[in-house]
Image (cartoon, rainbow, N blue to C red):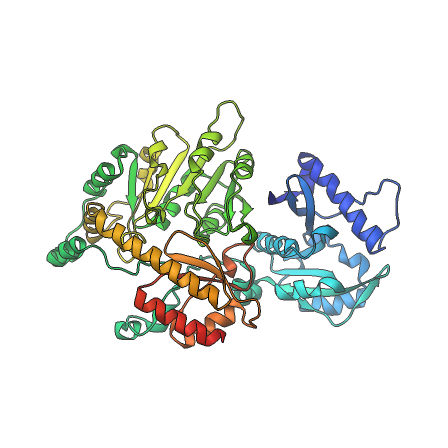
Length: 552
Protein backbone atom coordinates (compact mmCIF):
# COMPACT_ATOMS: atom_id res chain seq x y z
CA UNK A 1 0.00 0.00 0.00
CA UNK A 2 1.40 3.39 -1.04
CA UNK A 3 1.70 6.14 1.59
CA UNK A 4 3.52 9.46 1.84
CA UNK A 5 5.67 9.91 4.96
CA UNK A 6 7.25 13.19 6.12
CA UNK A 7 10.17 13.48 8.52
CA UNK A 8 13.14 15.71 9.33
CA UNK A 9 16.72 14.55 8.91
CA UNK A 10 17.28 14.89 12.66
CA UNK A 11 14.66 12.15 13.08
CA UNK A 12 16.20 9.82 10.47
CA UNK A 13 17.09 7.27 13.17
CA UNK A 14 13.36 6.77 13.75
CA UNK A 15 12.99 6.02 10.05
CA UNK A 16 16.27 4.16 9.57
CA UNK A 17 14.93 1.68 7.02
CA UNK A 18 13.55 4.45 4.79
CA UNK A 19 16.66 6.57 5.34
CA UNK A 20 18.93 3.76 4.13
CA UNK A 21 16.72 3.23 1.09
CA UNK A 22 16.95 6.96 0.28
CA UNK A 23 20.75 6.73 0.20
CA UNK A 24 20.62 3.65 -2.07
CA UNK A 25 18.07 5.23 -4.43
CA UNK A 26 20.00 8.48 -4.60
CA UNK A 27 23.16 6.58 -5.53
CA UNK A 28 21.36 4.58 -8.23
CA UNK A 29 19.97 7.73 -9.85
CA UNK A 30 22.60 10.42 -9.35
CA UNK A 31 25.76 8.30 -9.53
CA UNK A 32 24.88 5.47 -11.89
CA UNK A 33 22.14 6.96 -14.06
CA UNK A 34 23.00 10.69 -14.26
CA UNK A 35 26.76 10.30 -13.54
CA UNK A 36 26.65 13.39 -11.32
CA UNK A 37 28.68 11.67 -8.57
CA UNK A 38 31.46 9.10 -8.64
CA UNK A 39 30.74 5.46 -7.88
CA UNK A 40 31.59 4.09 -4.44
CA UNK A 41 31.89 0.61 -2.96
CA UNK A 42 29.02 1.21 -0.53
CA UNK A 43 26.63 2.01 -3.39
CA UNK A 44 25.16 4.65 -1.13
CA UNK A 45 24.81 8.43 -1.38
CA UNK A 46 23.43 10.35 1.60
CA UNK A 47 21.02 13.16 0.80
CA UNK A 48 21.93 16.47 2.51
CA UNK A 49 18.34 17.71 2.69
CA UNK A 50 16.72 18.89 5.94
CA UNK A 51 13.13 17.69 5.33
CA UNK A 52 12.05 14.56 3.49
CA UNK A 53 8.77 13.52 1.90
CA UNK A 54 8.87 9.88 0.89
CA UNK A 55 6.57 7.64 -1.10
CA UNK A 56 6.58 4.12 0.32
CA UNK A 57 4.84 1.07 -1.09
CA UNK A 58 4.58 -1.72 1.50
CA UNK A 59 7.74 -0.48 3.28
CA UNK A 60 9.66 -0.18 -0.03
CA UNK A 61 10.77 3.31 -1.04
CA UNK A 62 9.66 4.16 -4.57
CA UNK A 63 10.44 7.88 -4.52
CA UNK A 64 11.23 10.89 -2.40
CA UNK A 65 11.80 14.64 -2.47
CA UNK A 66 14.01 16.52 -0.05
CA UNK A 67 13.58 20.13 1.05
CA UNK A 68 15.91 22.72 2.52
CA UNK A 69 15.22 25.97 4.31
CA UNK A 70 17.16 29.16 3.54
CA UNK A 71 20.10 28.24 5.76
CA UNK A 72 20.75 24.98 3.91
CA UNK A 73 20.22 25.83 0.23
CA UNK A 74 22.37 23.44 -1.79
CA UNK A 75 21.85 24.65 -5.33
CA UNK A 76 24.28 27.54 -4.67
CA UNK A 77 27.02 24.93 -4.75
CA UNK A 78 26.15 23.81 -8.29
CA UNK A 79 24.70 26.96 -9.88
CA UNK A 80 27.10 29.53 -11.35
CA UNK A 81 27.04 32.60 -9.10
CA UNK A 82 25.90 35.02 -11.82
CA UNK A 83 23.02 32.69 -12.81
CA UNK A 84 21.93 32.24 -9.19
CA UNK A 85 21.91 36.02 -8.73
CA UNK A 86 20.02 36.90 -11.92
CA UNK A 87 17.64 33.93 -12.16
CA UNK A 88 16.92 33.29 -8.48
CA UNK A 89 17.72 36.10 -6.05
CA UNK A 90 16.38 38.90 -8.23
CA UNK A 91 13.05 37.08 -8.65
CA UNK A 92 12.25 36.44 -4.98
CA UNK A 93 8.91 37.86 -3.84
CA UNK A 94 9.90 37.69 -0.18
CA UNK A 95 13.09 37.46 1.80
CA UNK A 96 15.72 34.79 1.35
CA UNK A 97 14.97 33.79 4.95
CA UNK A 98 11.49 32.58 3.92
CA UNK A 99 12.73 30.78 0.82
CA UNK A 100 12.70 26.99 0.58
CA UNK A 101 14.59 24.77 -1.82
CA UNK A 102 12.96 21.74 -3.42
CA UNK A 103 15.70 19.33 -4.35
CA UNK A 104 16.37 15.73 -5.25
CA UNK A 105 12.97 14.82 -6.68
CA UNK A 106 13.82 11.16 -7.19
CA UNK A 107 11.67 8.25 -8.32
CA UNK A 108 12.77 4.66 -8.79
CA UNK A 109 13.11 3.94 -12.52
CA UNK A 110 10.51 1.12 -12.49
CA UNK A 111 7.90 3.44 -10.97
CA UNK A 112 8.27 6.46 -13.24
CA UNK A 113 5.19 7.51 -15.15
CA UNK A 114 2.88 6.46 -12.30
CA UNK A 115 2.25 9.96 -10.91
CA UNK A 116 4.62 9.36 -7.97
CA UNK A 117 6.47 12.59 -8.83
CA UNK A 118 3.23 14.56 -8.87
CA UNK A 119 2.24 13.22 -5.48
CA UNK A 120 5.63 14.05 -3.99
CA UNK A 121 5.60 17.58 -5.38
CA UNK A 122 2.05 18.26 -4.23
CA UNK A 123 3.00 17.17 -0.72
CA UNK A 124 6.18 19.28 -0.86
CA UNK A 125 4.26 22.37 -1.94
CA UNK A 126 1.67 21.89 0.75
CA UNK A 127 4.37 21.43 3.39
CA UNK A 128 6.24 24.59 2.36
CA UNK A 129 3.00 26.56 2.17
CA UNK A 130 2.06 25.48 5.68
CA UNK A 131 5.55 26.34 7.01
CA UNK A 132 5.12 29.94 5.86
CA UNK A 133 7.41 29.85 2.82
CA UNK A 134 7.14 32.81 0.45
CA UNK A 135 9.34 31.45 -2.34
CA UNK A 136 10.40 28.07 -3.66
CA UNK A 137 13.55 27.55 -5.70
CA UNK A 138 14.96 24.49 -7.39
CA UNK A 139 17.26 23.23 -10.10
CA UNK A 140 15.38 20.89 -12.42
CA UNK A 141 16.76 18.20 -14.67
CA UNK A 142 15.66 18.81 -18.26
CA UNK A 143 13.68 15.54 -18.34
CA UNK A 144 11.27 16.66 -15.60
CA UNK A 145 10.75 20.31 -16.50
CA UNK A 146 7.18 19.68 -17.65
CA UNK A 147 6.21 18.43 -14.19
CA UNK A 148 7.67 21.48 -12.46
CA UNK A 149 6.03 23.82 -14.94
CA UNK A 150 2.65 22.12 -14.43
CA UNK A 151 2.65 22.94 -10.74
CA UNK A 152 3.59 26.57 -11.25
CA UNK A 153 7.39 26.81 -11.39
CA UNK A 154 8.87 29.52 -13.62
CA UNK A 155 11.74 27.89 -15.50
CA UNK A 156 14.75 29.88 -16.62
CA UNK A 157 15.87 29.67 -20.23
CA UNK A 158 19.44 29.49 -18.98
CA UNK A 159 20.83 26.06 -18.12
CA UNK A 160 24.05 24.70 -16.64
CA UNK A 161 25.72 21.30 -16.37
CA UNK A 162 26.30 19.21 -13.28
CA UNK A 163 28.50 16.38 -14.42
CA UNK A 164 26.93 15.33 -17.71
CA UNK A 165 23.39 16.31 -16.66
CA UNK A 166 21.73 19.55 -17.78
CA UNK A 167 19.81 21.55 -15.17
CA UNK A 168 17.64 24.68 -15.23
CA UNK A 169 17.12 27.10 -12.30
CA UNK A 170 13.46 27.52 -11.30
CA UNK A 171 11.45 29.77 -9.03
CA UNK A 172 7.94 29.96 -7.61
CA UNK A 173 6.13 32.67 -5.63
CA UNK A 174 4.09 30.68 -3.12
CA UNK A 175 1.37 33.31 -2.66
CA UNK A 176 0.76 33.70 -6.39
CA UNK A 177 0.80 29.95 -6.92
CA UNK A 178 -1.86 29.46 -4.26
CA UNK A 179 -4.08 31.99 -6.02
CA UNK A 180 -3.43 30.94 -9.60
CA UNK A 181 -2.96 27.18 -9.36
CA UNK A 182 -5.01 26.11 -6.32
CA UNK A 183 -7.34 23.96 -8.47
CA UNK A 184 -4.36 22.28 -10.12
CA UNK A 185 -2.05 21.53 -7.20
CA UNK A 186 -4.50 21.42 -4.31
CA UNK A 187 -2.85 24.10 -2.15
CA UNK A 188 -5.20 25.52 0.44
CA UNK A 189 -5.48 29.06 1.70
CA UNK A 190 -7.23 30.02 4.92
CA UNK A 191 -10.62 28.79 3.72
CA UNK A 192 -11.68 25.49 2.27
CA UNK A 193 -13.24 25.57 -1.21
CA UNK A 194 -16.50 23.62 -1.53
CA UNK A 195 -17.83 24.55 -4.94
CA UNK A 196 -21.02 26.57 -4.96
CA UNK A 197 -19.83 28.89 -7.74
CA UNK A 198 -23.44 29.09 -8.89
CA UNK A 199 -24.13 31.65 -6.15
CA UNK A 200 -21.51 33.94 -7.69
CA UNK A 201 -23.45 33.63 -10.92
CA UNK A 202 -26.97 34.17 -9.56
CA UNK A 203 -26.71 35.93 -6.22
CA UNK A 204 -30.15 36.04 -4.63
CA UNK A 205 -31.84 36.51 -7.99
CA UNK A 206 -33.87 33.31 -7.75
CA UNK A 207 -35.49 33.75 -11.15
CA UNK A 208 -32.00 33.66 -12.64
CA UNK A 209 -31.10 30.77 -10.36
CA UNK A 210 -34.00 28.77 -11.78
CA UNK A 211 -32.36 29.03 -15.21
CA UNK A 212 -29.11 27.29 -14.20
CA UNK A 213 -28.32 23.71 -13.23
CA UNK A 214 -26.56 23.49 -9.87
CA UNK A 215 -24.61 20.22 -9.97
CA UNK A 216 -21.38 21.38 -8.34
CA UNK A 217 -22.67 20.91 -4.78
CA UNK A 218 -24.37 17.84 -3.39
CA UNK A 219 -27.68 19.32 -2.31
CA UNK A 220 -30.65 17.00 -2.66
CA UNK A 221 -32.56 17.20 -5.97
CA UNK A 222 -35.89 16.58 -4.21
CA UNK A 223 -37.68 18.72 -1.59
CA UNK A 224 -38.05 17.81 2.09
CA UNK A 225 -40.99 15.61 2.98
CA UNK A 226 -44.42 17.34 2.99
CA UNK A 227 -44.60 17.21 6.79
CA UNK A 228 -41.43 19.33 7.04
CA UNK A 229 -42.75 21.96 4.65
CA UNK A 230 -46.13 22.01 6.38
CA UNK A 231 -44.80 22.61 9.91
CA UNK A 232 -42.44 25.38 8.79
CA UNK A 233 -45.12 27.05 6.67
CA UNK A 234 -47.65 26.91 9.52
CA UNK A 235 -45.14 28.24 12.04
CA UNK A 236 -43.17 30.57 9.75
CA UNK A 237 -43.67 33.69 11.83
CA UNK A 238 -42.75 31.81 14.99
CA UNK A 239 -39.67 30.34 13.28
CA UNK A 240 -38.45 33.85 12.50
CA UNK A 241 -39.43 35.45 15.80
CA UNK A 242 -38.77 32.98 18.62
CA UNK A 243 -35.52 31.56 20.00
CA UNK A 244 -35.27 27.78 19.62
CA UNK A 245 -34.77 25.24 22.44
CA UNK A 246 -31.30 26.04 23.77
CA UNK A 247 -29.62 22.67 23.18
CA UNK A 248 -32.07 21.07 20.75
CA UNK A 249 -33.48 18.83 23.47
CA UNK A 250 -36.46 17.44 21.55
CA UNK A 251 -34.36 16.91 18.43
CA UNK A 252 -31.86 14.88 20.45
CA UNK A 253 -34.69 12.82 21.91
CA UNK A 254 -35.99 12.14 18.39
CA UNK A 255 -32.54 11.12 17.13
CA UNK A 256 -32.18 8.83 20.13
CA UNK A 257 -35.55 7.20 19.45
CA UNK A 258 -35.16 6.81 15.66
CA UNK A 259 -31.48 5.85 15.64
CA UNK A 260 -31.48 3.83 18.86
CA UNK A 261 -28.66 5.85 20.41
CA UNK A 262 -28.48 6.96 24.01
CA UNK A 263 -29.44 10.62 24.24
CA UNK A 264 -26.40 11.11 26.48
CA UNK A 265 -24.15 10.26 23.53
CA UNK A 266 -25.68 12.82 21.16
CA UNK A 267 -24.75 16.42 20.41
CA UNK A 268 -26.20 18.49 17.58
CA UNK A 269 -25.05 21.59 15.75
CA UNK A 270 -25.60 23.61 12.58
CA UNK A 271 -24.09 21.16 10.09
CA UNK A 272 -21.20 18.72 10.10
CA UNK A 273 -18.66 21.48 9.43
CA UNK A 274 -19.73 23.16 12.64
CA UNK A 275 -19.14 19.90 14.52
CA UNK A 276 -15.68 19.53 12.93
CA UNK A 277 -14.63 23.06 13.87
CA UNK A 278 -16.02 22.74 17.40
CA UNK A 279 -14.96 19.21 18.29
CA UNK A 280 -11.79 18.22 16.43
CA UNK A 281 -9.64 20.92 18.12
CA UNK A 282 -10.82 19.50 21.48
CA UNK A 283 -9.84 15.96 20.54
CA UNK A 284 -6.51 16.74 18.85
CA UNK A 285 -3.63 19.20 19.20
CA UNK A 286 -0.63 20.38 17.20
CA UNK A 287 1.38 17.33 18.32
CA UNK A 288 -1.23 14.88 17.05
CA UNK A 289 -0.54 12.64 14.08
CA UNK A 290 -3.70 12.09 12.02
CA UNK A 291 -4.42 9.78 9.09
CA UNK A 292 -7.02 10.75 6.48
CA UNK A 293 -8.02 9.44 3.07
CA UNK A 294 -7.14 11.17 -0.18
CA UNK A 295 -9.35 11.99 -1.97
CA UNK A 296 -11.81 12.84 0.80
CA UNK A 297 -14.03 15.73 1.90
CA UNK A 298 -11.59 18.64 2.03
CA UNK A 299 -12.87 20.33 5.19
CA UNK A 300 -11.16 17.72 7.35
CA UNK A 301 -7.69 18.42 5.97
CA UNK A 302 -8.37 22.14 6.28
CA UNK A 303 -9.32 21.91 9.98
CA UNK A 304 -6.38 19.63 10.79
CA UNK A 305 -3.78 21.79 9.05
CA UNK A 306 -5.06 25.34 9.40
CA UNK A 307 -7.01 25.26 12.65
CA UNK A 308 -5.20 22.62 14.71
CA UNK A 309 -1.85 22.64 12.91
CA UNK A 310 -1.16 18.95 13.44
CA UNK A 311 0.70 16.45 11.29
CA UNK A 312 -1.48 14.92 8.59
CA UNK A 313 -0.74 11.71 6.68
CA UNK A 314 -2.64 11.10 3.46
CA UNK A 315 -3.77 7.54 2.72
CA UNK A 316 -4.08 7.58 -1.09
CA UNK A 317 -6.94 5.91 -2.92
CA UNK A 318 -6.29 5.10 -6.57
CA UNK A 319 -8.57 5.27 -9.62
CA UNK A 320 -7.10 2.03 -11.01
CA UNK A 321 -8.44 0.31 -7.87
CA UNK A 322 -11.82 2.03 -8.17
CA UNK A 323 -10.85 4.12 -5.09
CA UNK A 324 -11.61 1.06 -2.94
CA UNK A 325 -10.07 0.99 0.55
CA UNK A 326 -7.30 -1.48 1.30
CA UNK A 327 -8.71 -1.97 4.77
CA UNK A 328 -5.87 -4.06 6.21
CA UNK A 329 -3.24 -1.52 5.15
CA UNK A 330 -5.40 1.28 6.52
CA UNK A 331 -5.70 -0.49 9.87
CA UNK A 332 -1.95 -1.12 10.06
CA UNK A 333 -1.05 2.51 9.33
CA UNK A 334 -3.80 3.83 11.62
CA UNK A 335 -2.21 2.08 14.61
CA UNK A 336 0.80 4.40 14.40
CA UNK A 337 -1.41 7.52 14.35
CA UNK A 338 -3.28 9.29 17.13
CA UNK A 339 -6.42 9.49 15.03
CA UNK A 340 -7.94 8.29 11.78
CA UNK A 341 -10.73 10.20 10.02
CA UNK A 342 -12.88 8.50 7.38
CA UNK A 343 -15.92 9.40 5.27
CA UNK A 344 -18.13 6.41 4.44
CA UNK A 345 -19.52 6.46 1.79
CA UNK A 346 -16.55 8.52 0.75
CA UNK A 347 -16.80 11.87 -0.96
CA UNK A 348 -15.99 12.57 -3.78
CA UNK A 349 -15.46 8.94 -4.82
CA UNK A 350 -18.89 7.62 -3.80
CA UNK A 351 -17.35 4.34 -2.63
CA UNK A 352 -18.82 2.61 0.42
CA UNK A 353 -16.79 0.24 2.58
CA UNK A 354 -18.71 -2.45 4.44
CA UNK A 355 -15.62 -3.18 6.55
CA UNK A 356 -15.89 -0.26 8.98
CA UNK A 357 -16.92 -2.55 11.83
CA UNK A 358 -13.87 -4.71 11.19
CA UNK A 359 -11.62 -1.62 11.23
CA UNK A 360 -13.09 -0.31 14.48
CA UNK A 361 -12.80 -3.69 16.18
CA UNK A 362 -9.22 -4.21 14.99
CA UNK A 363 -8.10 -0.76 16.15
CA UNK A 364 -9.53 -1.67 19.56
CA UNK A 365 -8.02 -5.16 19.64
CA UNK A 366 -6.42 -5.40 23.12
CA UNK A 367 -3.83 -7.87 21.85
CA UNK A 368 -2.32 -5.48 19.28
CA UNK A 369 -0.68 -2.21 20.31
CA UNK A 370 -2.32 0.88 18.81
CA UNK A 371 -1.91 4.62 19.36
CA UNK A 372 -5.23 5.37 17.71
CA UNK A 373 -7.29 7.16 20.36
CA UNK A 374 -9.81 8.70 17.97
CA UNK A 375 -11.74 6.99 15.16
CA UNK A 376 -13.96 9.56 13.45
CA UNK A 377 -16.37 8.18 10.83
CA UNK A 378 -18.44 10.62 8.81
CA UNK A 379 -21.62 8.88 7.61
CA UNK A 380 -23.27 11.84 5.89
CA UNK A 381 -24.28 9.81 2.82
CA UNK A 382 -24.96 6.40 4.38
CA UNK A 383 -28.75 6.75 4.28
CA UNK A 384 -28.61 6.52 0.49
CA UNK A 385 -27.72 2.84 0.93
CA UNK A 386 -30.82 0.74 1.54
CA UNK A 387 -30.58 -1.41 4.68
CA UNK A 388 -27.19 0.09 5.52
CA UNK A 389 -25.85 -0.48 9.02
CA UNK A 390 -24.52 2.60 10.76
CA UNK A 391 -21.56 2.34 13.12
CA UNK A 392 -23.62 4.29 15.68
CA UNK A 393 -24.48 0.97 17.30
CA UNK A 394 -20.81 0.53 18.28
CA UNK A 395 -20.57 3.85 20.15
CA UNK A 396 -21.54 2.36 23.56
CA UNK A 397 -18.79 -0.25 23.17
CA UNK A 398 -15.84 1.88 22.05
CA UNK A 399 -14.81 5.10 23.78
CA UNK A 400 -12.59 6.20 20.89
CA UNK A 401 -15.37 6.04 18.28
CA UNK A 402 -17.13 9.16 16.97
CA UNK A 403 -19.86 9.04 14.32
CA UNK A 404 -20.66 12.30 12.53
CA UNK A 405 -23.83 12.68 10.46
CA UNK A 406 -25.06 15.66 8.50
CA UNK A 407 -28.79 15.75 7.78
CA UNK A 408 -28.28 18.21 4.92
CA UNK A 409 -27.88 15.90 1.96
CA UNK A 410 -30.07 12.87 2.64
CA UNK A 411 -32.94 14.87 4.17
CA UNK A 412 -32.94 17.88 1.81
CA UNK A 413 -32.03 20.30 4.60
CA UNK A 414 -28.83 21.89 3.25
CA UNK A 415 -30.20 25.40 3.62
CA UNK A 416 -31.27 24.84 7.23
CA UNK A 417 -27.97 23.33 8.51
CA UNK A 418 -28.33 20.54 11.05
CA UNK A 419 -26.09 17.59 11.96
CA UNK A 420 -25.38 15.38 14.93
CA UNK A 421 -22.52 13.49 16.47
CA UNK A 422 -22.67 10.23 18.46
CA UNK A 423 -19.89 9.46 20.91
CA UNK A 424 -19.15 8.52 24.49
CA UNK A 425 -17.21 11.80 24.57
CA UNK A 426 -20.32 13.88 23.92
CA UNK A 427 -20.57 14.97 27.54
CA UNK A 428 -17.10 16.51 27.24
CA UNK A 429 -17.59 17.92 23.74
CA UNK A 430 -21.03 19.48 24.20
CA UNK A 431 -19.58 22.30 26.33
CA UNK A 432 -17.93 23.61 23.14
CA UNK A 433 -21.21 23.76 21.21
CA UNK A 434 -22.81 27.24 21.50
CA UNK A 435 -26.36 27.54 22.80
CA UNK A 436 -29.05 27.90 20.11
CA UNK A 437 -26.59 26.42 17.57
CA UNK A 438 -29.50 24.89 15.60
CA UNK A 439 -32.22 27.28 14.48
CA UNK A 440 -35.89 26.71 15.27
CA UNK A 441 -36.88 25.85 11.66
CA UNK A 442 -33.90 23.48 11.43
CA UNK A 443 -34.88 21.68 14.65
CA UNK A 444 -38.48 21.32 13.51
CA UNK A 445 -37.46 20.16 10.03
CA UNK A 446 -35.01 17.57 11.35
CA UNK A 447 -37.59 16.13 13.77
CA UNK A 448 -40.28 15.76 11.11
CA UNK A 449 -37.82 14.38 8.55
CA UNK A 450 -36.63 11.68 10.95
CA UNK A 451 -40.25 10.69 11.62
CA UNK A 452 -41.05 10.22 7.92
CA UNK A 453 -38.45 7.83 6.51
CA UNK A 454 -40.61 6.23 3.81
CA UNK A 455 -40.76 9.46 1.78
CA UNK A 456 -36.96 9.67 1.64
CA UNK A 457 -36.41 5.99 0.87
CA UNK A 458 -38.55 6.34 -2.24
CA UNK A 459 -36.57 9.38 -3.38
CA UNK A 460 -33.27 7.57 -2.76
CA UNK A 461 -34.46 4.93 -5.24
CA UNK A 462 -35.04 7.63 -7.84
CA UNK A 463 -31.52 8.98 -7.23
CA UNK A 464 -30.02 5.52 -7.70
CA UNK A 465 -31.90 5.10 -10.95
CA UNK A 466 -30.79 8.52 -12.17
CA UNK A 467 -27.17 7.87 -11.13
CA UNK A 468 -27.14 4.69 -13.23
CA UNK A 469 -28.75 6.52 -16.16
CA UNK A 470 -26.27 9.39 -16.01
CA UNK A 471 -23.32 7.02 -15.57
CA UNK A 472 -24.29 4.93 -18.61
CA UNK A 473 -24.78 7.96 -20.83
CA UNK A 474 -21.52 9.62 -19.76
CA UNK A 475 -19.66 6.35 -20.37
CA UNK A 476 -21.15 6.15 -23.86
CA UNK A 477 -19.58 9.49 -24.82
CA UNK A 478 -16.16 8.50 -23.48
CA UNK A 479 -16.11 9.48 -19.80
CA UNK A 480 -14.49 7.13 -17.31
CA UNK A 481 -17.17 6.79 -14.63
CA UNK A 482 -16.29 5.41 -11.20
CA UNK A 483 -19.06 3.42 -9.47
CA UNK A 484 -20.67 5.07 -6.47
CA UNK A 485 -23.62 4.66 -4.13
CA UNK A 486 -24.76 8.20 -3.30
CA UNK A 487 -26.10 11.30 -5.06
CA UNK A 488 -22.94 12.04 -7.06
CA UNK A 489 -20.50 10.38 -9.44
CA UNK A 490 -16.80 10.95 -9.92
CA UNK A 491 -15.60 10.85 -13.52
CA UNK A 492 -12.57 11.41 -15.70
CA UNK A 493 -12.91 13.25 -19.00
CA UNK A 494 -12.65 11.24 -22.24
CA UNK A 495 -9.03 10.38 -23.03
CA UNK A 496 -9.18 11.84 -26.54
CA UNK A 497 -10.46 15.26 -25.47
CA UNK A 498 -8.26 18.34 -25.30
CA UNK A 499 -10.25 19.66 -22.36
CA UNK A 500 -8.84 19.74 -18.86
CA UNK A 501 -11.30 19.65 -15.99
CA UNK A 502 -10.83 23.40 -15.55
CA UNK A 503 -11.54 24.32 -19.18
CA UNK A 504 -14.40 21.81 -19.36
CA UNK A 505 -16.01 23.31 -16.24
CA UNK A 506 -15.66 26.78 -17.74
CA UNK A 507 -17.30 25.63 -20.99
CA UNK A 508 -20.19 24.10 -19.03
CA UNK A 509 -20.72 27.31 -17.05
CA UNK A 510 -21.13 29.26 -20.27
CA UNK A 511 -24.13 27.01 -20.89
CA UNK A 512 -25.43 27.52 -17.32
CA UNK A 513 -24.31 24.12 -16.06
CA UNK A 514 -22.25 24.11 -12.86
CA UNK A 515 -20.11 21.04 -12.15
CA UNK A 516 -17.28 20.44 -9.67
CA UNK A 517 -13.67 20.46 -10.79
CA UNK A 518 -12.40 17.55 -8.67
CA UNK A 519 -8.68 17.71 -9.40
CA UNK A 520 -7.92 19.55 -6.12
CA UNK A 521 -9.87 17.08 -3.97
CA UNK A 522 -7.11 14.48 -3.61
CA UNK A 523 -3.52 13.70 -4.53
CA UNK A 524 -4.48 10.85 -6.88
CA UNK A 525 -6.95 12.90 -8.92
CA UNK A 526 -5.84 14.50 -12.17
CA UNK A 527 -6.64 17.54 -14.28
CA UNK A 528 -9.29 15.39 -16.00
CA UNK A 529 -11.35 14.74 -12.84
CA UNK A 530 -14.93 16.03 -12.73
CA UNK A 531 -17.70 15.33 -10.22
CA UNK A 532 -21.38 15.38 -11.17
CA UNK A 533 -24.14 15.80 -8.58
CA UNK A 534 -27.26 13.78 -9.39
CA UNK A 535 -30.13 16.12 -10.11
CA UNK A 536 -33.78 15.57 -11.05
CA UNK A 537 -34.59 13.43 -14.13
CA UNK A 538 -35.40 16.56 -16.13
CA UNK A 539 -32.17 18.30 -15.13
CA UNK A 540 -30.05 15.21 -15.75
CA UNK A 541 -31.24 15.09 -19.35
CA UNK A 542 -30.22 18.73 -19.75
CA UNK A 543 -26.84 17.93 -18.19
CA UNK A 544 -26.22 15.20 -20.75
CA UNK A 545 -27.29 17.40 -23.64
CA UNK A 546 -24.90 20.18 -22.61
CA UNK A 547 -22.00 17.83 -21.89
CA UNK A 548 -22.46 16.01 -25.20
CA UNK A 549 -22.45 19.29 -27.10
CA UNK A 550 -19.24 20.41 -25.44
CA UNK A 551 -17.37 17.11 -25.74
CA UNK A 552 -18.41 16.54 -29.35
